[in-house]
Amino acid sequence: MNPSRVALAVLTLLAAPAAAAQESPGASWIDQPRDWSETLRADATALHAAIIDSHPGVHDSLNPEFRARVDAGLAVALERAAVTTDAGGWWWALRAFTASFDDGHVQINLKAQGAGFPTRWPGFLTVRDGAEHVVASRDETDASVPPAGARLVDCDGVPADRLAAERIGAFRGRWFLESQQALFSDWLFMNASNPWTPEMRSCRFSHGGETETYALNWRRIEPADLSGRRNTLAQRPRPEFGLRVLDDGAVWMSLPSFNGAPGSDAHTALVPLLADAADRQAALRSAPRVVLDLRGNGGGSSHWSREIALILWGEEWVRAHTPPPVEAIEWRTSDANLAVVQGYLDEWTAAGESAERIGWAREIVEGMTAARAAGLPYWRDAAEVPPAAGEPGAPPAQPMAGPVYVLTDPVCSSACLDAVDLWKAMGAVQIGRETSADTVYMDVREEALPSGLAGLVIPMKVWRGRPRGNNEPQRPAHVFAGPMGDAAALEAWVRTLP
Image (cartoon, rainbow, N blue to C red; front, side, top):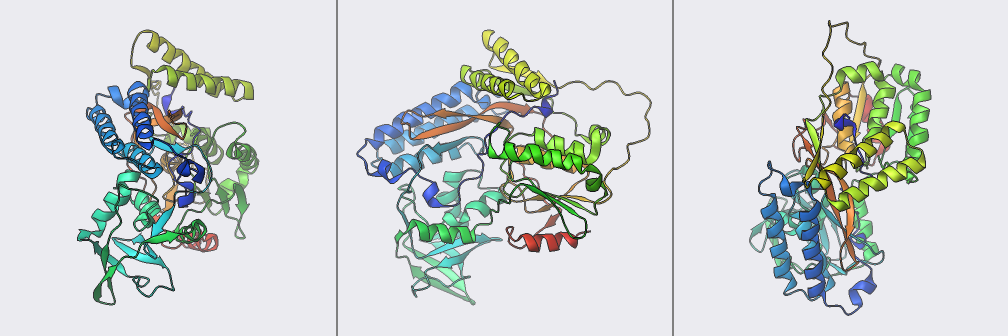
């Protein structure tokens, strides 16, 4: 098996919801009497146990600090449990625990839908603009708040960047990434019932060459108001799946997800979309340019991107330009991980997926089963050694008449990153915004926590020798400075590219 082509994960989990109301459990959970101290203690302990039992990092000799990080995260959570009195303390302590891994594939998800935690603000929101935090939304009826465009200097003597790291990054993780700051910087002046981030009292802002101190008047903001403001500030477009031919003959293919789960909305859309693309292969190859639009794509299964590569460039070109496979994949051999992969095998067999894909899953199940029986922490899926090359022949001809552009945004992660890796190796040019990033721990599964209020997301395997580094984003050759949701502006801008 070539492990560089195996992609089982079907969950899209790296991009968090846009609105605070979607960040938290329903109001009934918050209002009902509960021992939140004990709830946090039990959930944090179970989270720790699941990581130790199933995460590939626990036995990773290349990450010797991993186990200490897991234990330190539990220690902090248990300290907070001793003084936790409400749902906000429970939720944000668990978020901090999972954020401490700096891994987008380790997450905590809420199981209930409904109204969110009560959220407070001081009458304005900021977003990160370059190296600055700038007032971008404000209560226009409140003359006491800083003006639009004012730049944050500090709050209560703490500089702006440190504030953001402590108040947002500590609960999101990977704050060193441009994508994280682009997606979540507007949380700096929101408090969704987080007791671990006390509300600032006063802040200094610079505007028009002057620096002024503002006393902050924190108050409740209604969910609809907050959601509307955040949606206005956010640049998280998610276009519909589709293949469009523009007026100049260029082709624009929108791919907002790579979810591989049979029956999912993405799977249902991708199967006919790729069939349509294959039928139009000649038109795609002769187009003046092709845009592969990955806006809103948080990942899924990597087999879609390979199928698209084969349609555009063909087997010969793909074979000649595919990056060398990773050295190996090591699957953590816990019973829980094995059960999940077995579930994929059963589901794909019942759904009539390709024999190749079913064969991948069967080989993994058999390998993990044997390693588990032998008491080994990993089943190692080594890369195939390519056959010895004979006399070099003529290189394959580039089948694409025009450039292929890969349009990315900060949401792009997991299998979306795999697509960018592959298509750039084929010769495509990345445009748009810098992507998110992922660690070498991949292919996630979910596990419920004892409270029933939340579930853990945990990776099951580790890549060995992946060319793209750990938590390394993909950076565009051409950066689009405008709103990523402005489709007309994007199409006009792409026409100007070399």
